[in-house]
Length: 326
Ligand code: TYM
Image (tube, rainbow, N blue to C red; front, side):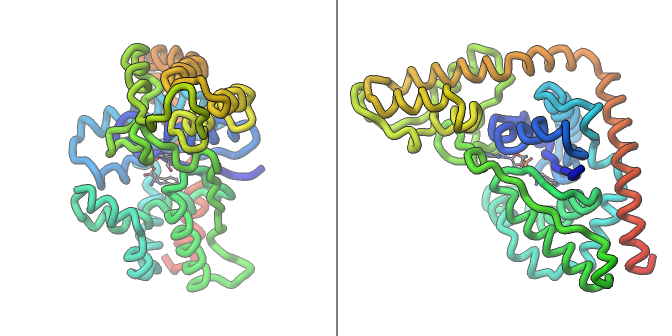
């Protein structure tokens, strides 16, 4: 059985980009893969300094993972801080990481340009991410396009470590592959740029119905008149619809035909997207309300998940410690 690992930062409410680019794949893969899905709480320290907000967001990401359909019987769900071996491994990796590998990372520059403090933690963020990944020997890492470079850095670091310390036959680290959905790798937000917490353009599928509808109605479109045929591929509403329903779904092909035929206004497409979201996430919305009332269940899921993750991670860490002479 192939092994899968991925994680999300608890830096705010999850949005449709996180779902379409990442969580949807986790849910689909969990029945025939060995799954490690975690909350990247240490990574979130690079962007916020509000302890109560971090505690709240961390629990909320777990609740949302479960609401979206992750099943603890199929997926090991844990918090990064509950598996301390990962940070140990990050140090070991940092000692083989050439500094210029970090200099090449684009996310550091982007985040500093957005106003985040230029801390050493932010600078070496990709090493901790490599450690998250390599710590469970995964084959696949399902993520959105913005994480592609981090997976490449992970592979580079694994190779570098193996080259420094191992004979070919007893490599310590396996090289994982990124798994990126073509139609959802970069889900646009309501302003057409990549959907992101930091651009204030995100759609939260758990919003109350009225504000959710209002948010969708705000999606920016061009000014093509109602009667004119429209190109669905160039429209943000359609891109979101297609990523959520799937490119081959009849609802997607029907909507594309309506665009091309003309006579359909963008407000109709927005209404169709709103209805799709209510339909796709109806069950998740109900489940989330229930889960919010059961904190002891969440704690149990996290305890079990951390135990399972530590069992695996400690084997990998032991290999790395042995290889370097600790
Ligand atoms: P984060 O928390 O920013 O995002 C979580 C996941 O959601 C994806 N994503 C998107 N996909 C498509 N379109 C979008 N608009 C969009 N916005 C976000 C991200 O690509 C990601 O898959 N560094 C990671 C967290 C992390 C991690 C890891 C991921 C830490 N360690 C190990 C994988 C493996 C991050 O900041 O993701």
